[in-house]
Image 1 (cartoon, rainbow, N blue to C red):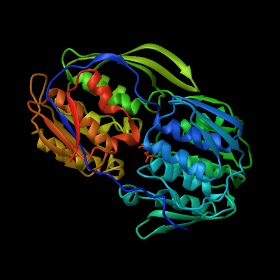
Image 2: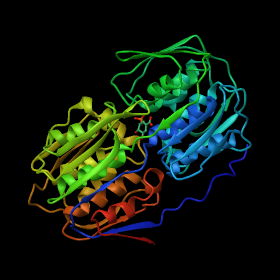
Image 3: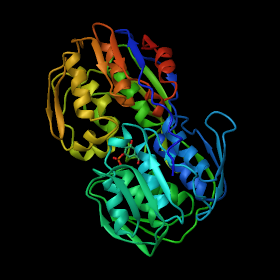
Length: 449
Ligand code: S3P
């Protein structure tokens, strides 16, 4: 099977961010990435038409969308954020002609590994240079216990080849709190004989469980145990995707560190398994309010208001780590501006994200003159305090979207311009980021170079 769908990778986008400014405005950040991926997956396997509003038109979720088109699913995109999926039912996917190219998206690769393990055709999952370095044994090992036939590359890396197999349910204690592993196994379990029972070591995002229930597929949740039976079906419906709290996080931090800031962020998902960033920022002294709370598409949502407040360092409770797992790059910038020391531990998972987020952030903090000590499972950061300023200079994001966006916010408190390299991948999760930040008070210029 050829890998001909792989587009060339771009690493040349540079952000030049002017120091200072304040964040003001009323805005809506793009749709939730996790929920957007899942809407395509379950919508494609549903019986009938699924309509999606607020879909994230970022490269990651579009890779998932293209993968299902490559497997014969008709998916329309009539207007921005709107998707119409002509579900083919649980057994209606067709063998793709080429490897499915999933770009930078770990969620696509890990969830699809499970979903495809029980199909009656061969598939190959490939990704970009970053995804090709990320660990895939965490999904392959439990899938093999279910009877799946997966072949990884040396070192447990992708591309992954998946051959047809008959799956059976397992009772599996997950070694790490990972929603990607949990979701992979839940999707495989729909094709398995009997019951699959998963035990998670700590709560992590539960969008798959919620959406399965929304599609009428029974999932039992009892404390940290989740069980599901194979052989069911999915009833198509409508999904309203909330704005991504992981994208809102940059603005929550930016406004919190920058005197005079006052921002309203509309329609943000506040699922309890995702609000670690709000809990941690509030514990540091942030002024974040819920203006209006409601439910959309089975998920709790709110309009948030965030205003500047002097932050202080804290020891981050380890139970908040899975609930804020994608928000630590932004939280490190909050810690860099806080008074006193912030201590993070129990966060070794950050080392296997789109980059090693402990080291990449530490290298950037070094450029800005922020004292810190790197640990194997976290970091300690000595903040510059309310009246201090961050330094300036050139930061390499190593193609990690969240690192690039976090250092954009750091410029609000810097004494000189910050240049951020390798920003192309901001488009994986946050299309329109540069325009949105410019519109609410940050002096950002982009160039290719
Ligand atoms: C995700 C789960 C998390 C998160 C990722 C999205 C998901 O990964 O970091 O950005 O949609 O399930 P892990 O499962 O590796 O923690």
